[in-house]
Amino acid sequence: MIYENKDQLKKGCEATLSHEGGDVRILDEERFRSRLIDDLIQTVAFSPDQGTRKAAGFLIRRGAAALGIVSSSIQALYDAMGRGEVGGFTVPAINIRGISYDVAQAVSAPRWRETSGRSFLKLPGRKSTTPGRDLWNTPAPLRRPP
Image (cartoon, rainbow, N blue to C red; front, side, top):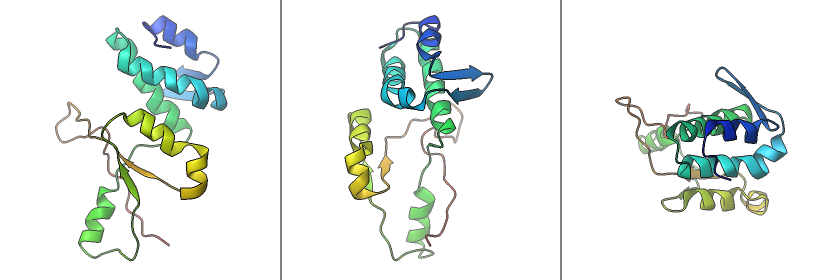
């Protein structure tokens, strides 16, 4: 479902998540993952109302964070590998350029996770209006593998 305004968005989310100030709490994780996330993504992409698109994007980011899912980059790891500071392993990554959401869904499917473990997805960058800030490629802390 594509929410056309904020009232529809609020009604569509009320049994699945709660929002107060900057906090989003997941009330029904199964419904969030199986249904609402698709509706929110379609709303971000296709809603005629800019405020509703922004609100849906906010709920996606905060809802994911409430589940421990964060957007980050492993560029610092690639840089450290290039400098010879870490090594002896490879980083399996998938570079996604088109139909990003559909490909990410396929990679996240339970059957894929059973056979491949963790997956790193490289999505096209989305530049912020804040100089020097890239919304999707925020650096992740560099940790040495065990």
